[in-house]
Image 1 (cartoon, rainbow, N blue to C red):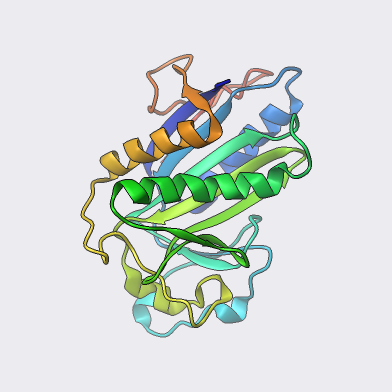
Image 2: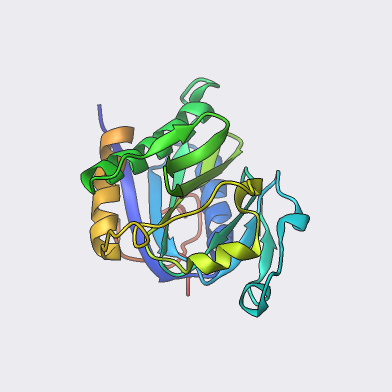
Length: 242
């Protein structure tokens, strides 16, 4: 049985803005008297290092001027420290896990990884899991990071997939607290792909893995952005303002 999904996209959105948007949406979903539709947002961030709940500020290395210029933000997702920036595609999935068992959280992470693994397979790449460290890995390094937060049964945050970011900025941190595990990207692996094509592949994988069916938004067309609304139905999805 398929479940409805609102799909939105935005361009370059500051991390703090996207986080506020997610929290606003989660609260509306949580407080609604009826189950509201899950929603998926694709976007990119300006360069930023984010430190998750297990992260350590000493993993910010400041090795050169370019890395030192990247701001550092504490965040509420799981995991340690990572980099976000242009050329990296973020997929934030806001999903109501309350109808499912307590094991749904681990399964949710597994499914996010599966979305990436299936997408990579279409590009001729074999992604793999590491049982100790969430994300998707290749022999050349980590290609996708996964980090989530559950707030009273609603999950947010999601995954980041390195399409063609500036990998040199990863030198300014210890990515995910793993000094001996390199990070790679599709571009570094010789895979040139537009953001639009990658989004299409990912949304198809999300629908397959999570049994979603994308439905039209209540205002503009699917994949577009919306302004915030108020009231109980305020979780008509709204993309973060730029």
